[in-house]
Image 1 (cartoon, rainbow, N blue to C red):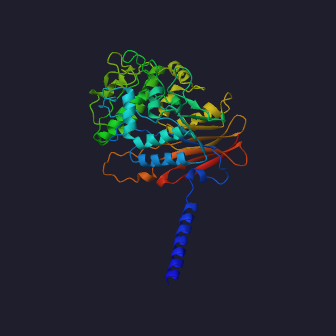
Image 2 (cartoon, rainbow, N blue to C red):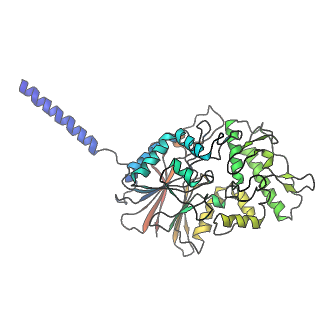
Image 3 (cartoon, rainbow, N blue to C red):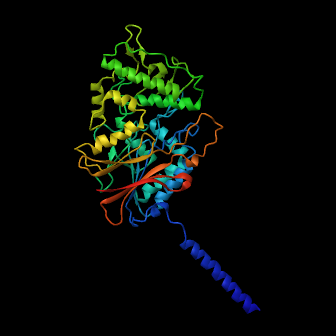
Length: 454
């Protein structure tokens, strides 16, 4: 009897052991390592994410619900055996989306702001730091508009050792990155073509000497106020009427186009209940030190002659100034000012710049272009001037879906969390697969893929 019990015990132990070994052997592979069947197991994949909008204060940050998923995603990147590079395509940190009455730095410095941001989002930054520290995956950061004011030194506080892709010279808030070994791939944030969001040097010398912040900075401050102190469209403050009294004057016409855009966004998108004459926008960033009213930004008719004027950005509404600004932002092919102003709210216009600036540009050899900025994930094919297939992909965003209704039930696990994977195929290194994905429910969901032969 004892012998039988001993045999049964051995059999049971062997069964449990075999089961454990089976579980180990059947462990689900890293999602990045099982994304496609035609890719080998070498480190060849380039992963791109953008528009994380990591906030300084989780009470108003644009990314809160998605933080745990982002941390999970980054840990998957870290444990992958096939990821070669991780590229963060701009708007990683965010000193724009701050409620209008909030002192951005709270009396401290930008470095203090960065440290507070890291502390508020510790899990995400820990994951990034570990990826960089491991040294197996190259991590590159490309500046966006919401983080255009951050110095390279302060970005390094958040991500020690990160590779920073900044254009040469003093144009530090924009950059284009070509991944190692792939000069035909161009990754940038995409804000350099945006009239509201590209670097605006010298626009407000009387108020803020040396400031580069674009008009979109004030848009973001008002937008944050719109969601943290919400009202209804019906109860919101309406934009005063402005008339175009000199339609043959190109500058006046451009200012009127600008006015119409502000009227649309303030009355339909970022409506607020504030008195537009009240000084509510506390700055103290990027050489701005004053507190402004919404009417400092909005165009108005001058009581003297009826012309359209404004307190801030008043001198940027000529084609010559826009061309000069585009040159400063390293734009290759010039755009018309009256297309660029409304184009700031049109993701199709911004996305089309990939084709115009790269694929239809005889001086560009790019075949794959990645933007972020518009928050609209998409993947489209084009032919360049030589008739060769090219692919443009927008990497979307990781920000939560915002709502003014604090009781609204939103399944955030099915919203945004977009990313891109670029990898050469196993059969031919010159054939590159470009894939747009969602991270919904923690799963890699393929939205669309295209193959390009470089």
